[in-house]
Amino acid sequence: MGFWRLFTSILILNLFLSNSLSSAELSEIPTNFLNYAKQPEVVNLMVDARRRIHQNPEVGFEEFETSKLIRNELDKMGIEYKHPIAVTGVVGMIGTGEPPFVAIRADMDALPMQESVEWEHKSKVPGKMHACGHDAHVAMLLGAAKILQDHRQELKGTVVLVFQPPEEGAGGAKKVVEDGILENIDAIFGLHVSVDLPIGSVASRPGALLAGSGSIPQQTIDPILAASNVIVSLQHLVSREADPLDSQVVTVGKFQGGEAFNVIPDSVTIGGTFRAFSTASFMQLKKRIEEVIKAEAAVQRCNATVDFSPDNKISFPVTTNNKVMHKHLENVAGDMLGTENVKDMQPSMGSEDFSFYSEVIPGCFFFLGMANETRAKLASWHSPNFTINEDALPYGAALHASVATRYLLEFESKSHISDRKVHDEL
Image 1 (cartoon, one colour):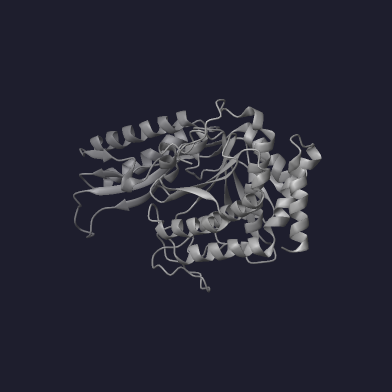
Image 2: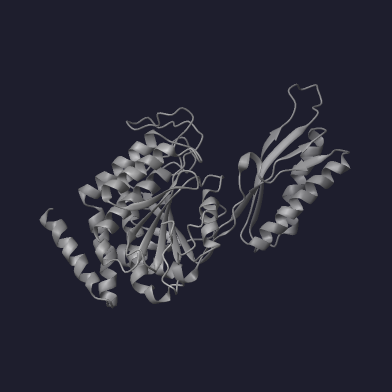
């Protein structure tokens, strides 16, 4: 162990020895964790894990090798874990094994698309790639695990590491909840890399952050005209019925029907998505979509069927940040990055299955900057040209470790678990 690392470890240890830390002492924890995360040993761990995962992408509920890699790394660190969770998921535990329990989460799945980026660690699997940064999310949570495990004696409770199977449409978070993993957990935090935010910054907001989402495929027994009328009428749901202050979106992105220009097809299939920022608006929009589709089909003497969960896709609720947990994130990130680098963002029409967690327990989801103005602009999520700025990995790892550690120190007396029971599955 080098002198600098020894000094950092002793400094962090001294900060934790007191049961009641001053605000100045608490504020030093994120900075020290960031310095720790930037050490070559931790950086190499994250970069190596991220590149191995990137080369071998696995889509929803097929993340068997990714899960194996995670378990191997946790074994090396001496971290206990439970597997399988929600088919391929892994849930680790660091600390006392006693309340309070706080969770930090990373999603694991890739996307069914061909990578166009030519580099040494390009996807080796045709038609699959990590085009949304989940490989980096896993790597950062492993980095956080390393930081926390190296300081486990000082944790005033238990940190739960949630390596979650598919976020991309299949709703792995929903299965994690159904498996009872959140039963004794007091709060949960999660992040997503951002190609627009500068490196060394984060963005989030209290309340509704990301929209709820659903799918709207529809078939008609007659032709293109009926489906065309349906599409036009669906757009009116937002322009004519929705409150302008209550953002909603209906998008039709799929239209399939017929194989010849001079033959009327027997059926047409259209598909799309819809999103809203409140559960009430989401359910009302869903109801009206089905009514409009069936009514327009009837006008054209057609029959229509509506399926809101095609291809096992699950509708996501609105992702809502708990105000107290968001303030906690603001405080921790501000101490680490400076308050000027903690941004308040506008609600986004994107969706995230982290919403299943925040429906059950207090949670906070935030975005982590990767952009470097001295380099080329990063391609957007779900692009075959998507890349990760690996310089952001230490920031994500340190933020994970810091929000969890500070939560245990600052919220110990507020745990909802009064009988001191320990989650058996962990």
